[in-house]
Image 1: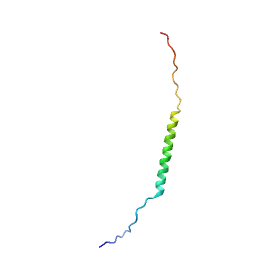
Image 2: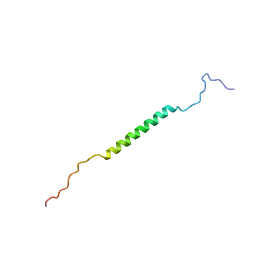
Image 3: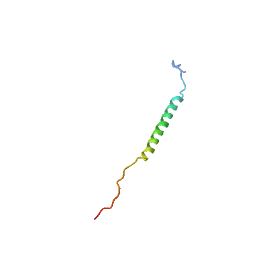
Image 4: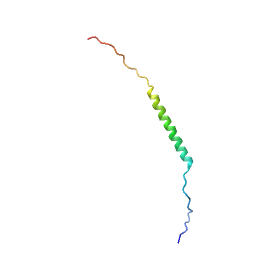
Length: 55
């Protein structure tokens, strides 16, 4: 004998809009991190010049 529930059963479903938002955020953050890594390679450094000393 099955007891009737006062709450109707709904089938669980995956919402697509929040999934798209998360994927867009991950893509944008990956692009920002990768762009910041490439600009760090172009950093200019003032190196000391070599000179010969007298002994």
